[in-house]
Every structure is written in structure tokens, then in C-alpha cells.
Length: 430
Image (tube, rainbow, N blue to C red; front, side, top):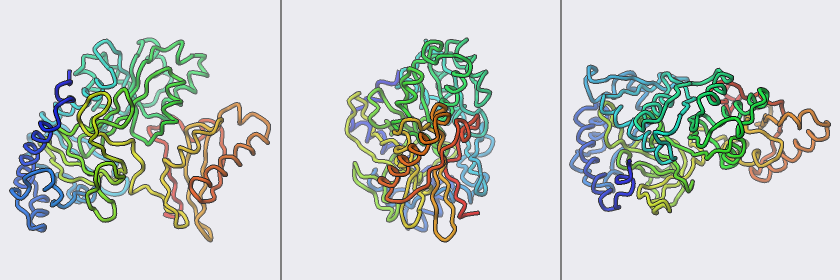
């Protein structure tokens, strides 16, 4: 369905990007006060941006820019042309308001349909969408993409897990969209209900996101459910899910650069980095009508490559996220990303995928990792728990070069039916 644009020759892709870039630059400058101001402060005119390299002349857009223009300061269209609003959670101040025209929603559906098509979703699939249907963009984004592919959509939303399992079984669901940690909660309840996820369900594939997850988590999901598990990437500021997705080779996520122009920068200096270097992802929307966004600092750390994938798709790929610039933990002068901790923990038998990082301060910072263990380990002899605790602490120290305290807890102590496990609890901020 999307073969032509996915395998577009490199020169034609660049030509399309630059045509759209010039148009969006002029559009944002003419219709969004923030961008007119940023251009003026930088001593730039829209005509100064002639190609992709010139994009580096532009100032960045940040989350604070969006919050400070709450609610409608970023709109490029009259309110009568806005047919949907979403928002971020707003837990640290004003939420970010996301606005969509009719064409924005049509384009968003095409992007999520493209992602689902890449992982093999077709009109023959029954697709259960287990992400929240509310102001969060995750649920509705993939809902309309799946419908565009003529798949049978089950708009299950989040929570009510026993009912989710009944629908998975009774409706013979073959594909799911979910948060990884929630799938393990489903597996736990399947066990209690004497349901074997492989024997009794019909799942073949799943697309997962909304929280960081590792290759070890992928392996567990695929083993428990007998599926192919694919990562995807999106963020509300760009529309929602649908920015990038893994193909069958699972060697990076294809970023749809006919809609989003990607750069990777040094998060400290702001300088653009060359291909293959780790840095912060910066995105520019190329087709947004209601809210065009130029050079948006996502705070996500990744590696961008333009090498052609083995699948033949020509769009650049980003690595699975390597952390974020804003949830990097600094403990006793050591920089730590939650993904480092997850990678260590999930390779240890007996440890489940749910964990919580707690930072406290007495005389000096203390790092505690609370982690769930499997039921058989918790019910075993006390020395088994002690050995597991010691192993986890030793392996974390080797990787982090920092002493941690590991606290082992029973299954489902941390996890549950909420959409996201709170990974970091920083008591130094209380």
C-alpha cells in the first residue's frame, strides 16, 4: 500500500523534503507569532532557508515554547478550522495543547497505517487497541490507522484486564497495540485464569510503546505470547504515534522523513552531529497545518542513520531510544539512564520487567532499585532471595560504577492496570 513512498530513491526524497521544508518555513513565519519573533531575533528571513543544511540556522523550539503559548498561541489556522484537540498531561505546569485540522487527521491516519502495514497488519487482522482513548494521542492515533487498512478494530482502551483477555480470546485477536508492562500484567492474569497465551490466544504481532523498553523485554514478550513484537516511536508534538516504526529486521526504526525532517544534535552545544553519532533527536514537521513546529528538541537520545535497511526502505532510521536528556539521573556525580538499569535487571532470571528507581538523600544520594521477582522466587527459601539481591546489586555496580540497594518485592507490587509504571521517584525533589 505504501511501497512507493517507502522505497522512494534518495534524491527524490531529498527533493520532496526541501520542497515541503520551504513551504512550511514560509507558512510558520506568516501564521505563528512565535516563529516570526524567532526569525527576527536570529536575523533571518524565510528565504534564507533554501535547503536542508540551512535548517541549522534556525533557533530550536522547546517544550517551554509550547507551554508558554498555552492554549492557542501556536495555532497557524483560525479556530473554526480546528476539529480536534489533544493535550499533554500538564503535570509540570500548563499542558501542551495539540490542534488538528481535517487534513492533519487524515495525514496522521496515513502515518499510523503505514506503521501498522510495515509490521504486517492487513484487512485480515483483528486489532485490539489497548491504549487509552482520551487526551493522550496513543489510542486514537492507531485506531484510525488500523481502520484505514480495513483491519477489524477492537477499541478496548486501557485497564479492565480480565475483559481484555476475554476479548483477545473470543474475538480471535491477531494484533495488539499496548504498553509493554501492561502485557506482562495480562500474562499474569492469564496464568490465574488458566489461559495459555500461546495455546489459547491467536496473537501473531504487537506494536508497543509509550514507555522505554529493551530488547530483553522484547524477547520476553515474544516468548510468552508467541508473537513478533515491534517498537514504534511518536510524540504528541508531532501528532502522536506514527513517526517511526521497526520493520521485520528490527534494526532501528524507519522515520517517515516525508513528513518529519530529523536531525541529531549535541544536547549541550546544540551543534548538529553527523550520521551515526549519539545525540538528541530534533524534528521539524513538514505537513502540519494547525500547528507547524520547527526544529523541536524532543529530548530523546538516539542515533540517526541514512544507510539503506536490508528491507529496502529508503527513509532514515533511528536507533531504539537510548535515554532522555531530561530523565537522566545524576547520582553522586554519575550520569545514569533508566534503560541501563533495565538492561541489567531483565537479563537476570527470576526478575520481572517492572522496577522503580528511588533516589533519596540523607548525607549523600542513595539509589534504591525496587524490582518485582517471579512468584516462584519469592516463595522460595530466603537464601534464594538474598542471592538474587546480591547478584543484581553486583551487576548494577559493574555497569553503573555506583553502589545501589536492590529491594525485591512480590509480583504486581509495582505493576497494575495503570497506563505507565512510574519509573523514577526522586525524593530529593520533595
